[in-house]
Length: 109
Image (tube, rainbow, N blue to C red; front, side, top):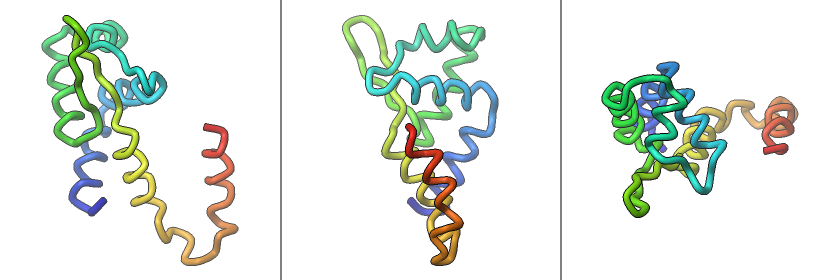
């Protein structure tokens, strides 16, 4: 991941609706959720939510796949991993003990 793609992902997540939708999709991996389920969870109209979903897709955080008559949305876990590594890489300047609490919290995932 480079700075431009990290900024794109962070900008996409910098809205409550998009952040909530992305976190919900992460919780439902690997199956994802239908677009209708996401719309219902958001409480928004389909057209308003579609705009938010397009921003997440453009940033590479969400991918769509057709399942029968429904369109299923999935979080791109590799993109999330890349963003997290980009943000934390070399944060401790070689002092692993500074990162151990963060790693311990993530280990329960």
